[in-house]
Image: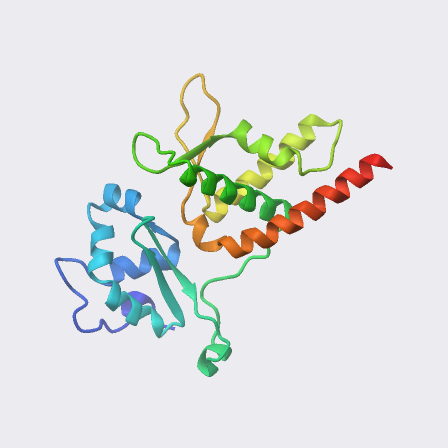
Length: 220
């Protein structure tokens, strides 16, 4: 398959000095965030807003949809649902689906709830709408849902591994270290696109069942 750079450029691909490849290639690699794009490329986000119609047409031939949330400030590509699409049903997926472990799913749900509470409370940092949590905050979120153990070091190692996985998935971002302070993480708002209210409600029920199982085990 030809690379994006080698594919024919649709009419109207160039506007204000921007070209489609400078937008599609980063999208194929991951997420474009408004705050990062504005800082790094001085206008990549605005170029994407201007050319979003062309980008949608461009990626649609690859079986992808552009998800762009102007209010939250992120954009990414999502594989089109093949159901009801005969062409899509046989096409290879360009965006890989990942099977998550229960602890990682748990952490995502807990972070999503924290983000909902943050938004409901109108909490904002000095630079915008960033929810920043310390490692200790995240540990306390997870601790009550994980099996009790006398090996605290092992528990911390496991939680750190789950945090690292969520960072790798792009839903947490490590903040710059500050002398004398522990590691902090920004909860990326793109999490809202993957964990919606319905998913969260269903996961709430599973959490309740899981917690009941833990309590029943403690009583035995």
